[in-house]
Amino acid sequence: MNGWQTLLYKETLRFWKVGFQTVAAPVLTAILYLLIFGHVLEGRVKVFGSVGYTAFLVPGLVMMSVLQNSFANSSSSLIQSKIMGNLVFLLLTPLSHWSWFVAYVGSSVLRGVAVGAGVLVATWFFIHPGMVAPLWVLMFAVFGAAILGSLGVIAGLWAEKFDQMAAFQNFIIVPMTFLSGVFYSIHSLPPFWRAVSRVNPFFYMIDGFRYGFFGASDVSPWISLGVVGAALALVGAMAVHLLRIGYKIRG
Image 1 (cartoon, rainbow, N blue to C red):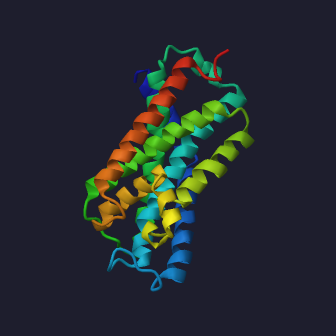
Image 2 (cartoon, rainbow, N blue to C red):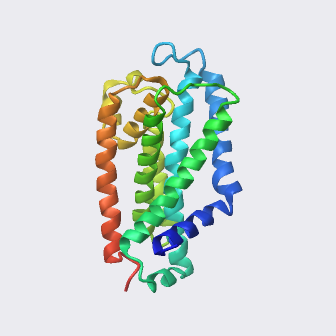
């Protein structure tokens, strides 16, 4: 293996060695959400015509798990390496900033997709939402995971201690994820909150992902793809730039 492949392998092995915590635990959390919200709201909430609420909920929970775990992977790896002092061993290597980016974001995509697949398989025992466009599902899952992996790189470089990282996740990532249509269709919201949802890029990731299951969505999947693609280009370019200049990792 060359440099970036070795680093990618190392970062993938880092989360896979503790898979019970990094993969199984998020799957269990998503199942609990499904059981609670599906039991309470099934039959009371109708979306996309004939689509039941529990079926509607499954893609949202899958994508929410993908996004949150992709962010957690790259951000936790960088902040732990900075605080424990072992990041210096990577700085001594001739790896380029592109190698860092591909390895950290690539491993985040792998973890996010692994957790999402686990959630989808686990929910299959309760309901079968179907999948009319698998390519759309895969595309939005990978793009969304790459965006959150890049955000994790940015947050990991910026944060200097664990409470700063927790603040970034609790006050930015979690609210944007929960307010992106995971548990509801934005057409059920008042006009003001519907407009707020439309400026949240996480909404387009989840709405486009959900289109792959039902062939129906709140906005056109092509609009969602455009927004997600632009967000990936912007966030990815920012992460690459910070890695190139060695932001907060080089003296």
